[in-house]
Amino acid sequence: MAQQTPALLTEVTDSIAILRFNRPAERNPLSRATLHELKTALSALLPRDDVKALIFTGTDDVFLSGANIRELSELDSTSALEFSQFGQDIFQTIADAKQLTIAAINGYCMGGGLDLALACDIRVASESAVFSHPGARLGVITGWGGTQRLPRIINRGPALEMLLTARQLTSREALTLGLIAELSINQVQTAMRIVHNSREREPS
Image 1 (cartoon, rainbow, N blue to C red):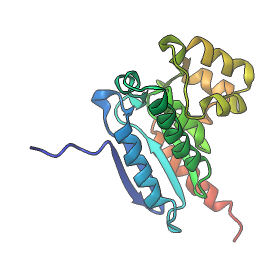
Image 2 (image 1 turned 90 degrees about the vertical axis):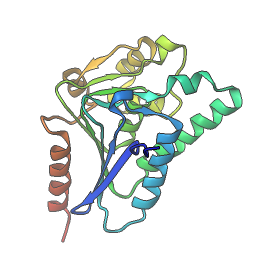
Image 3 (image 1 turned 180 degrees about the vertical axis):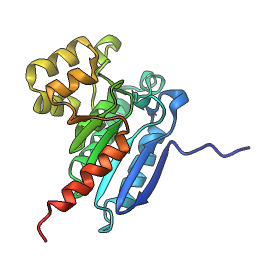
Image 4 (image 1 turned 90 degrees about the horizontal axis):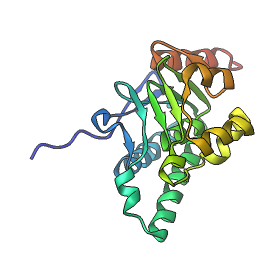
C-alpha cells in the first residue's frame, strides 16, 4: 500500500524553517495526527540555534481549517479536555518560541487554524484570505487559546463579534483591525523578507 504524504512538510533554508500544511483536499484540518506531526516538527526545530525563524503556511487556497469536526463529534468530556489541552500546549510552545514566528496565510484561516496564526508573532495574508471562528454555528468554542489571544490583538469588541457570531473577516478587514500586518501576493516570500529585515536591525 502506498505511503500517505505527510500532513506537514518541513524544510529549512537559510536558517528559516518553513512548515507547510499539506492536506488541501481535506481543507488542511488540524486533526490529532496533524497535531502530532506539528509537535514532532517543533520538538526538532525549536532547540536548534541555527533556526532563527519559523514560517507556517498552507497549500492551494487553504491555510488551516481548524479541528477535524468528525473527530470532535467522537469526543467525550474527558477526551475533549485532553484534546483541548494538547492543542493549547502546542500553540503555547509556538507563542513561547525563541525564534521569530510568522503565519503566512495563503487562504482560508478558520477556527483552530486561526488560533495557530494568533500564536505567531506576525501574520501576513493573501488578498483572498478569510478569517473566522465558526464555533458559534457548530455549538462549540475554540479551546486552543484563541479566546484569549484574539481580544489582545484586535481588541475586545471585534473579537467578541467574531467569536459569538462566527462572522467571517476578509483580509482587508483583518488588516484594518490589526489581525494581519501586511497583504501579500506571495506570503512565504513576504515572511522571509520580514525575517531578513529583522536580522538587519539586530545589533552587531
